[in-house]
Image (cartoon, rainbow, N blue to C red; front, side, top):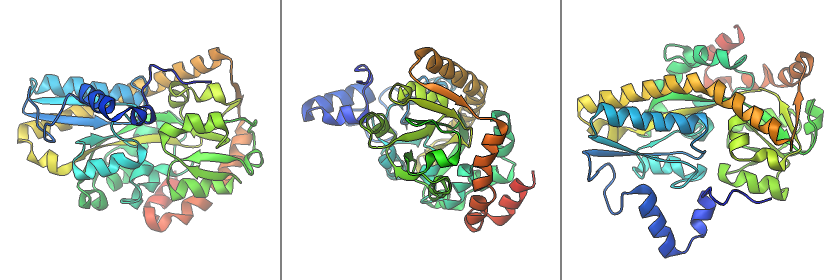
Length: 349
């Protein structure tokens, strides 16, 4: 089964000839030889790079951020949104942000844990009890929120977090029906690079394979990995359900994206434009939370309508078996990194 040829992935892009690649990049970014943050039309340009499609909650929130910021600044700031890993894939976008290769990214929180280990808190299995729990857990004045928005490690790496975007609860896809952790034993599961996520899946008996998001469809198609986990929106948008026989409604965690900006670029902005960026990020974050559930509900329906994947609903008892295998054991394993006070507070809820 082949991917939609209209969707240009980073891998497709890199396969283009040197001349074609240069022309394609010039056409997509509209920046040519322009210096970072400079724009012929306005005073500043923000390049916002991410790895998913525009129809996901993150993709839609990115476009909302662009719309709000360009309008509120009367074009003084231009926002270029680059989806689908067309500029940078998973391994490279953080390096690009730190170096100024892009001004903003919105990666999975696990991508930041190498430089800011405390963000592992967002990878905790069963951290939230349904999507309605997300805003309470990640509010700026919550213990989790404070550990992210005021994180010293991020600041030391020239990164400022402007918001936390919700992409939905995790579901498991596989070519084997999964109802218990035993069903995962020996299966090769693609994970995002995270020691905590790896520890969780090992508790369930799976073999873990860290992998660039843009590589997952091909890996599933070719059998390099047996399964993966993502929200419905990513599963449907990337067409993982077309190469996986089963989808288990596990809701064992949720995918959050810190909306991050290069702090040196941010601090070079005039005060009024800094405020405009912060306000636009807040509005886009509110919009993201308003649409995340709806986008995922539609994606689930589209998966069901496709008829290529059997959806397995876990009972409360079955889900509890997954939870008991990792909570509190995996939580406590990372308490020193996340903060024992935060872990104790979360466990006492």
